[in-house]
Structures are given as C-alpha cells and as structure tokens.
Length: 231
Figure 1 (cartoon, rainbow, N blue to C red):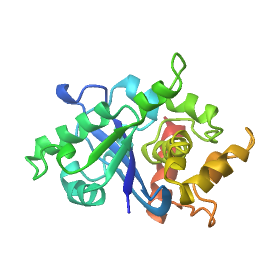
Figure 2: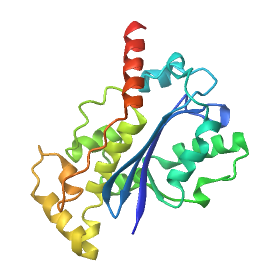
Figure 3: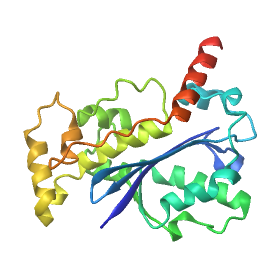
Figure 4: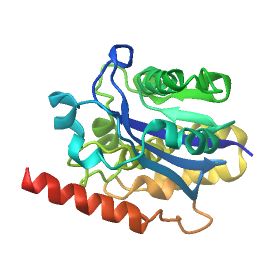
C-alpha cells in the first residue's frame, strides 16, 4: 500500500530564510493512487504582515488570520498527517523550505521533513513530459482538462486537490507498467474526451469520493469573502 499526500502551502511572501511564514496548508491523501476522502487543511496566524504581492495571489489578509492558531499549535497534527507518506508537491523546494523553517522556529522533533517523508516534485516531472511549455498549475489543469474554473485565487486545499488530479493524469501511463488496476485506469483515461473531467482517471472501479468542507471551513471561507468584499 502506497500512501501519498498531495500538499500545497500559502505564505506571507517568497523567502522563508528572511522571515516569511506559512499561512495556509492543504493536504489531500491518496492510497494506491486513489482518493481516500481524508484531507488536512489549516489557516495559520503568521504573527507578521503579509506582502502585498503575496496577498494579491492568495487573497488572504492579516485580519482574516488574526484569530487563527499559530504554527506551534498545529505542528503535531500536521506532522502526524504527513509522517511516513510520499509528499507530492509542485515546486517542492519552496514548500519544503517553508515547512522546515517552521519546524526550525519551534526546535521541533522533526528538523527536516525529508527525513520522515519521501518527496516527489511534480514540476520537473511536468517539464520532462512537456518541455518548452508552461508547466504551472493553471497550464497543467488546462492541458489535462482539470476544471479549475473556481480558482480565482490560489488556495492551499484547492490547489492540492487540483494538483492531485493533474498528478494522476500525468502519471497514468506509468501505471500500465504494473498492469492490474493501473492499466484499467490508463485505458479509461485515454477514452476520456478533452472536455471531460480528468477525475475519471482516478478510479474507475467505484465512485469518486468527494471531500466536502467542514462547517468550520465553510464559516472561515464565508468570513474571508465578507472581509475581502468590505476591503
């Protein structure tokens, strides 16, 4: 059984070594290339300001985060969710750098997440498959017919969900090397028209499990939308 965690973060800026912090973490669990329905999502109070450029990308304000937990309060839950899994991350050095910086601030038991998890960077994989083309998440969603129409801003959980579908589509041909279910998935994916959702490539043996937001997440989202509209 192979357990993978598709992970994304949002941050206050671009440089973890210069004091920027994580403000949102989103994780989607896959086991043997299938969605399990388990996820991890958390907004985090960075206890510092957010760069204007970063806020323009993710739309998350300091005011929205002021009542959220600090990283020290969520470190154990986040680590336990990821421990021992293979992390699938788009441009992994960025996110891993921030995660390790957060652990370093706490002198946490895990000094380097690479010691507890394998890391698969989907960006060089995409560049290898599509040389000379745009390989950011938006471009890959279009290329693999993954519906990203609701992605007005970057968001850690939404982007992790989109990346999970993109990753499964990008690697569906590799699964044919091992036959079995992987071969069925790849064959079904090849029959999917360009306008259909690539999610059919995730699992053809049973209905896709839909991860629904919790009441807490819905309330936080609505609060954020209200604050953004007022701002």
